[in-house]
Image (cartoon, rainbow, N blue to C red):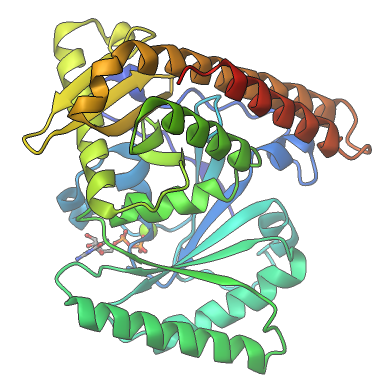
Length: 380
Ligand SMILES: Nc1nc2c(ncn2[C@@H]2O[C@H](COP(=O)(O)OP(=O)(O)O)[C@@H](O)[C@H]2O)c(=O)[nH]1
Ligand SMILES: [Mg+2]
């Protein structure tokens, strides 16, 4: 079997908003530390279930209509999502017809360094065959690597009524779980998402998949909770600007509409700044933006680092204290960069000595201390 590193051309988006270049260090060697710190997300499912479309729409700004002309994938396509921040992984897009019985399919290598397996099922199609393939895939993958997160995308749910969406989800969930318990594997946890590339559901689902692969997630959530509670903010999302997936949010529930508003705000900010500034500076340290909605709500965006933006939703009257919000934001931004540094340090330790387990508790302790310190510094 051959692999291919695909070079994508992103022409609907300024160059600088693409992800950095692919650093190959140690990634292709099974068992190397590089693979550990940069988990793989595998996209699997039957032919034409929508795998390549998902990857292109979420990570390469392809418009959903353009996916109609995607050619079918004949090799595994590796795509490196590398923005040197928290969102670092590889996506492997598989051809639908891949066969695990095939001796050239190196399942140890493929599932070994895999963080999440996204299995795409076309909800508009008869899904019996997909479920059979799903069962075989999970059994095989779990044997190689029991730590894989299994994510099922019940896909193409655009134009399907809410009732039948729920009905498909219930049915697929039931049958997939039954299949696995028949195989004696009912300890495997499956997550289900209803998705479509024609709305924000695919970004939301991918956000959840990626978040599970970020070891620092609890710290990030904690920092967001502290930030909003001291600043009179209702909801805050920490966005990966390039993909518009959110890598963390505070603990209040996410409603789809708020998420969509924040996504649209990022588009507006980037489109506008691309017009009025040079490509390299369209999103930089000074980037911030304020949108007042006609229902007393404010959307406030601040740049966190080159790749991350914080988008907040708050009531107009709470924005009177913008000074406090901005001060608290600076504390938040500083804390985020410290979490990064800790992450870098622990990654270095990992690569220095592959044999020694990374000292997780040391990092945790540092992160706890950091959260406590940030809490003290915040203005009320
Ligand atoms: N209606 C609808 N069509 C989709 C969606 N996602 C993908 N498709 C279409 O499904 C077809 C197959 O997609 P493709 O990505 O090539 O599937 P793959 O073989 O799994 O990689 C294409 O014509 C896409 O336009 C979706 O969310 N909704
Ligand atoms: Mg494909």
